[in-house]
Image: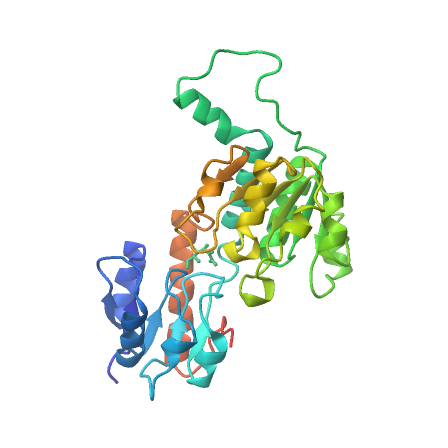
Length: 323
Ligand code: 8YV
């Protein structure tokens, strides 16, 4: 049987591209730029499998095709809010993601942001690099203590739990959780965590709030001006989930007026564009979507996509099918 025709929309780790090339008739998008709508439509027409990333916006009109050749989208990433699952299913296209393998590194990055915001690491580095540091003094760049503080976690799946493990066992933080549905008592007990019924109940109780829920329309602007107003005046918000979960204009306002203590963002609505109002906010730490960006994790993500693809083309159910 001929090898399935597979398209990588972006460059992947070299070793994984080589492994995929041994098993599939592989095309790599060599210029490594996001595909536009026409290119994505052409990909669905011409390839048996397309392996997209978060930069490929596979919205409903892209699937408006008669008889696409593509039978599976093997997404490189756990989040898939950039893919319209209903439209993919209507075309008979399976969609898979890469859970588990990136939980540790994404939680590491959420903790990095939390520590940076609390201890004003971004501000401190900027001061030093700009030649503005005048020397030590007792009142210089005073931050907020992390150890023993209360961390609110919105979305208690794999990454949320990995974050709780770091915060609770590494920093003695108290963990408060909001999740739909209810979390099993034995999982909460592992972290001494308490589950509350709503985000509104969680926000006023927490020194830090870290978002680990899915993106997409269901959680669009989940954290809006009203909810930012429920946070403690020195509370800090961390987002490694998806940009659309926060209303960025409302966040910019909260940061500029100092109604919250600070924020750490790894993801943005409409990334890579960053709203001007956020760029100048000093109590904000920003990273360019680095959650899973370690050699080990990116390799593991690639292998996980490959495993899903091999299963699919051998007629088995891929383990990470999401539709
Ligand atoms: C990925 C992510 O690097 O897996 C996810 O959902 O947000 C990132 O860790 C990115 O999405 C690649 O598509």
